Amino acid sequence: MNQGQIEEQVVLLDESGQPAGTAPKRTVHHTDTPLHLAFSCYLFDQAGRLLVTRRALTKRTWPGVWTNSCCGHPGPGEAVTDAVRRRVHQELGVEVSDVRCVLPEFRYRATAADGTVENEVCPVYVARVAGPPAPAAEEVAEWRWVSWPAFAGLAREAPWVISPWAAEQAAQLDSLDLTGSETSPRGPGRG
Image (cartoon, rainbow, N blue to C red; front, side, top):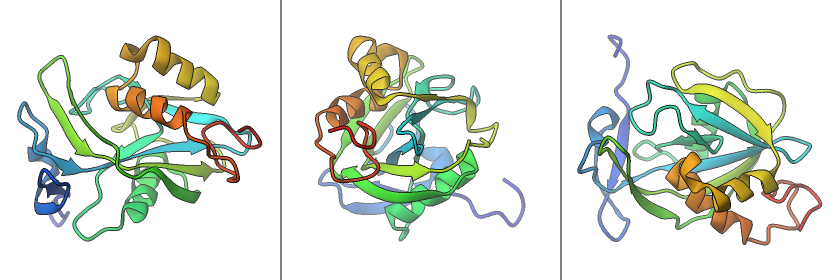
């Protein structure tokens, strides 16, 4: 951490999902990760394609794994939609519009091969993005635009090739009727 830079904090939660304190992000993910607040975001372009990313090899959790567009942790007192906008810009170098929550109560726990645990209340957002990403190398190794049916099919048929949270989320998102919105996992105009 650079001198003068504020250390990123995450919001710890009790078992009912209520705030129970904070901790430095760098200390939270290990073999006994406490329950904490996070978010996942799925970004769609004007053609209805989904942006998928492969996590940088230096990431603490699930390095090198393909996943949804962006994940992050809201800071203490930060609105989750503000955190979504902040992290998408930091990780992918783009601005988002039409940000909306589609799975407000998503929660999961997963253990990586090295024993590191993710244990999060993780509301899921969709948003629209214009233009190609310019990802930060320390966050994203690769990225691709894919169709939602291809991603949802992969999550169903081979969930082990993507992050565990994305596999679980895709199954739930694929069953949602998100018609009436210009940004939908099924793509614009598809219901």
